[in-house]
Length: 390
Image 1 (cartoon, rainbow, N blue to C red):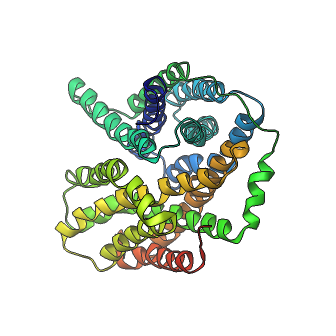
Image 2: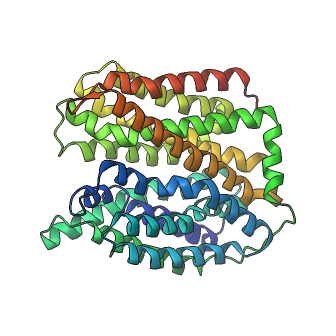
Image 3: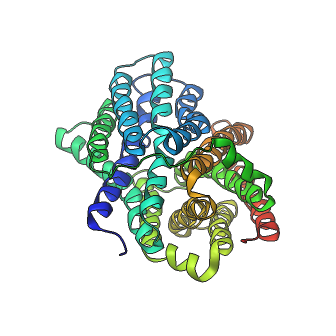
């Protein structure tokens, strides 16, 4: 490992808390919205859309601030402190308007921190193998907070009303603030603006890369919104579904640790990214052909592999081609395209497909899954045919 422990440990802690904060509430908040708060599916969708909306704007602003004006660690600490306050407030909201506005405020504070954590990692760690050993803490965090919340509810012998998850997220944000104080001073190092990062879109290869990443991120919303219900409609017990989908997180952690750096070194970025897209293509093909239930369960592994080999590999690729003066802005651009525009458009398309191909409460799943299958296929073919690594 080509980095000192006094840098490695804070980076791992920051990566863990960054995704623990999001993972604490995201998988379970819908149950509170649809259950105790009696919100509609459309209202629930809009509250979940606050993160993609914020990701269109906040990462670009945060990247610019870190590149030119404010120490990166102070932006992270300040943003998470505000996020903690807003999440405490959100836990007390019982109306759609109140919860939507507070969650939107939380999302604007949180969304800008994700690319900054990546930028921090790439600034201090150039070794790909060590980068993977830091990235692995993201899926570990997401899984760990879920298990902790389940254990808390079991100990209290309650199903929870969702406020516990939101308070848990707020406490984790305060923990993130403490971790930021352990980080080295990371001063701005550029006089360039966000427009210098956007200028890179003039390059055909980079434009194809960004558009492909946007499309792949968008199709993930079909997976997130539909996989659980699809498995239950196929006769898989609801008790089995969370464990089945957790296989994706396990696969993500294993792939990050053992395969990501190897693939980049031996295949290069183009074929690593193409392989990741191919894993999603295979997953949606399994869904479309209504494969047997054991294969359907095991296919969840494909999402974890795809996420690492495409989304994380894309973030690493962007860091290698960006001048160090716009490192923060470049990561902000990637997150704005994928977690922002991609997830937002994907949410809208997934909602349209699920409304169009449902009748009497029954979804026509093969037709629904055809949407991400076709988008992924076209995107992968164009990427392979046009994209070239210089």
